[in-house]
Length: 466
Image (tube, rainbow, N blue to C red):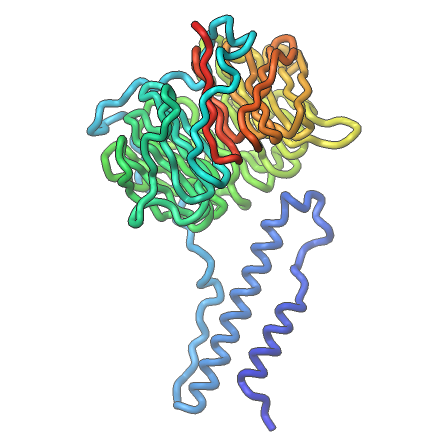
């Protein structure tokens, strides 16, 4: 008796489940290389599924006189576009006049920042009953936008602490967690989510355009300074460039070259762009050409966890950048020579390695130092003008989730809901605030206001006397 088609398919599925995921020995950094094993497994799964489907068609064909056609085994794998298309827009031609966005890191603060806010309890705006994952501030418009795990974004008035609007409707918005968001200079908002969608929200409205080019969750989105260009990075290993000059955005180019999910992305002056992936590679791009200018393989052992451009004493962006990794190292790179000029084991000690989660170099705002926060629960400052020599260190009460700098102070949000205010030059913790009940995932500061958001679903705001 011949085995039935059902029993054959069942046997094939049992073989697939028993088959181990192929890899060349135990990976040195399992968290960093798990995507490679996953890719191999999914390739084999797609192949096995195609074979099962072909087997089923063959069974039907033999009974009905139909010739079976075996589908492409890679049909389930998203196709990635070529690395170049039309060039990205370089000059502002938006229909709405661009607002002047205030610097993310103010160089000067009034003296009350060193003693504490007028009311430490602050103002609290509860917008969601689930964690807030990301945020962006528009000081010119007096508002902050936060993205939530409930799939919505919320816009909160910085002065009153009241919610202005919700960016989610039955026909517009994300279908999964919102993972990243940024304000455009004209007041529009671009957001990315676990659903692989980008949403471009109209200013002062809850209407949006959905951009569907990515095939996996969006990790980060950034805006190229001085242009109407947005850039997004994804777990699909691609970086995509968007022309947002007009009301309707369009894709300018798809940048491919990463072999692992892209976790970090930051735009620099002109058409400079850097991105870092889960496999430890950093790539420098030219936005105008959509091409790779340099590929730094194994820049870090493990994930690339932080990237930032160096800023001069006036806060201007230079051509030098810094990277931080899962290996606890802080590195300084010169794009002209395409090499690492300084490498310090900033957060490595006898107990292990602390992944560098945040790096800020903001001129006078960071006391002309490079400030890092890492998983070893410390904030450290280094002097880039002296071969990244250490200057100061501050201990934190918990894991650091977010950090901003302002007027020589580091503002670090921790996993226990506290916000530490640290003098960067000395490493002295001046005080701590109970900003949230759980992890603080976003921090923003102006001369007179502090804004935090986090896992308790609330936005915390407090004022400082002028």
